[in-house]
Figure 1 (cartoon, rainbow, N blue to C red):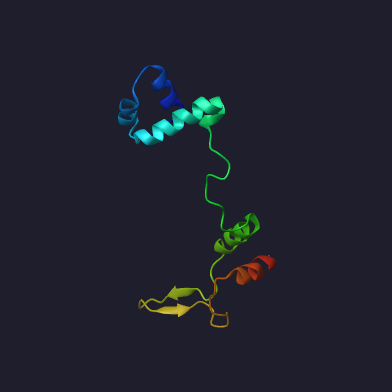
Figure 2: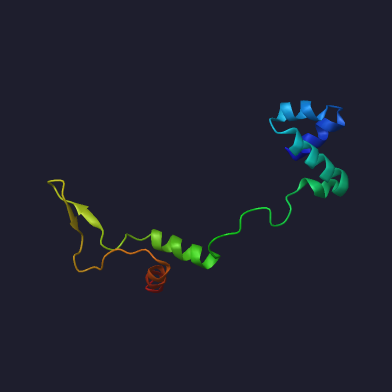
Length: 108
């Protein structure tokens, strides 16, 4: 979209017309044009740090995925009459924390 803004401005279209054509605000367009004029082709890309910082590390993310691929502790089974019964009553109750995740993934 940023490249289209530049190419349409090179064709001589005014900011309001480009904004209408691309469905964005004229102020956004002006910011993009000024940045392109100042930085050249590099002005079209994203600036570093523009996105939200991750809440979890890659290691934590991998452990969460590993935990979710397993059946939860205390899994309930549906009985013929429609009731629910624990699969194995000797298993501990379900709890989902990073500590539980660490224990579950270390068992592998």
